[in-house]
Amino acid sequence: MNWKLDEAQQKLRELIDAIANEPQLIFEQDKLVAVIVEPTVFEEFLAWHQQQKPDSIADAFVELRQLCAEEDYILETPTRCDRDNPFALGTA
Image (tube, rainbow, N blue to C red; front, side):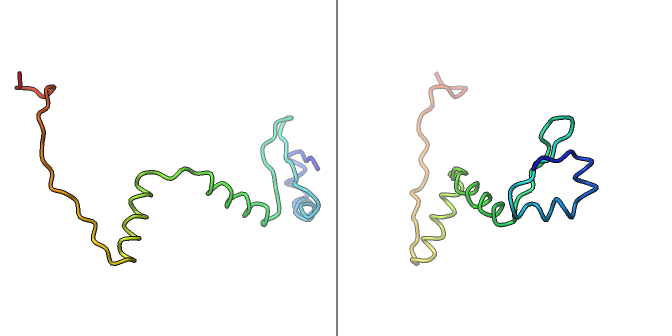
């Protein structure tokens, strides 16, 4: 059902009861400003949204550290060795 914002504010209890049947759309000046849905629908959306979020490299490193800790594995990193940089100032 569609509601005008003023009407939704005045009939909040009725609006909340109506979400059992279908999502309730709230409009202000013919512009959709809110949708009220059942909590389970919103929780499903949140779970879906979290799955859509791409993992960052930082997330991958966190997962790698956790795996290493669980497996009692030490990830050895080689010592750093600098190499020539022809773009660095002072070299020609």
